[in-house]
Image 1 (cartoon, chains in turn cyan, red):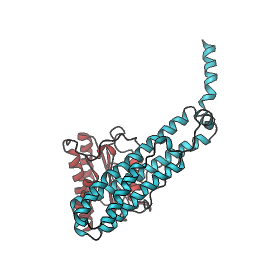
Image 2 (spheres, one colour):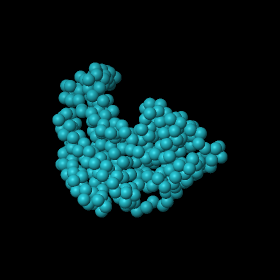
Image 3 (cartoon, helix red, strand yellow):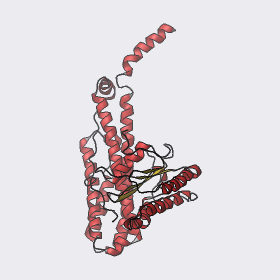
Image 4 (cartoon, helix red, strand yellow):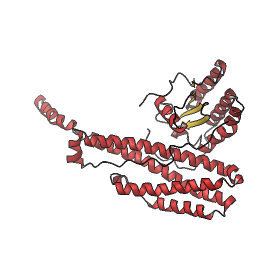
Amino acid sequence: MKIRLAVALLLAAPLAGCGINSVPTAEETAKAKWANVQADYQRRADLIPNLVETVKGFAKQESTVLTQVTEARAKATQTVLSPDDLNDPAKVKAFQDAQGAVSAALVNIRNITEAYPELKSSDNFLALQSQLEGTENRINVSIKDYNEAVQSYNTIIRTFPDMIGAKIIHGAKPMVPFQSQPGSDKAPAVKFG
Amino acid sequence: MPEPALALTGRVVDDAGLLLPQQEATLTRALAALERDKGPQFVVATTRSLQGRRIEEYSIDLARAWAIGSAKRNDGVVLLIAPNERKVRIEVGYGLEKRLPDEFCAKVIRETIMPAFRQGDFPGGIARGAGALIEQMRRAPMASLGLFPQRPRMAA
């Protein structure tokens, strides 16, 4: 009994250090963080129909930017990135570009609302604006958390001894970090005084 | 987890020195009662400097480093005032998003806190703003009318 236990431990010991457990855990963590990124982008998409209707109510002549955001949203909804594609740089880029087009369209909407004080001060628009800003902020936080998880994972699969398990058993490929959104380093302007 | 920018010395962390001792004490009692009666952990913080960072980044890092709110319920709230950068932010844990949605918090900042601050009345703005949030959290649970279905989230 004791000898068998000792043999079992001897066999187990080399495996423990070589990434059998740490690699899938790091990968699952990154994929779960990715799910949060996706949920937050979806949340933004869900706000857009309401935004379009509200802007139309005050500024229906601004059909160009309204069409632009509607189309960008539709394209982004169709550009799917599954968790298994997170190590494919081309697919990640396609997803990011589609979401980037939504971001750009939203900036254009924000710019034209400057010319419509009644729109800007309407309760509906103020509520929407706060929801959009809140959602953009959540997206940025989720991207940051995801990138940290990706960095952990990418480091583990490159570092001895975990890379042994990574290469032999998991065939692990590095995951692609997300670019932070353009303008995410600029604050929206709510200030007092 | 990196060190928080401010030490969590109590429910009110008045780094910028905006409150008199009795104002801080009154607020602390209200925040403690909220946690005792309803559960959420609400911390009011003022900071002398955002250290060149956006207030959104500063506040979430602070809330996470302080581990405000229960990990299970994600029911922490931070009201952060940065008087030198002239910024205010209400940071809400995911578990409270239906009770304190974005549009409600934005309205409290816009209609209750900012007008007082523009008059130079920091204690009044803080007390009334915190009061509005506390009152909202004390309400009996509303029927679920949130815009967003609860999505499972992984805690940070």
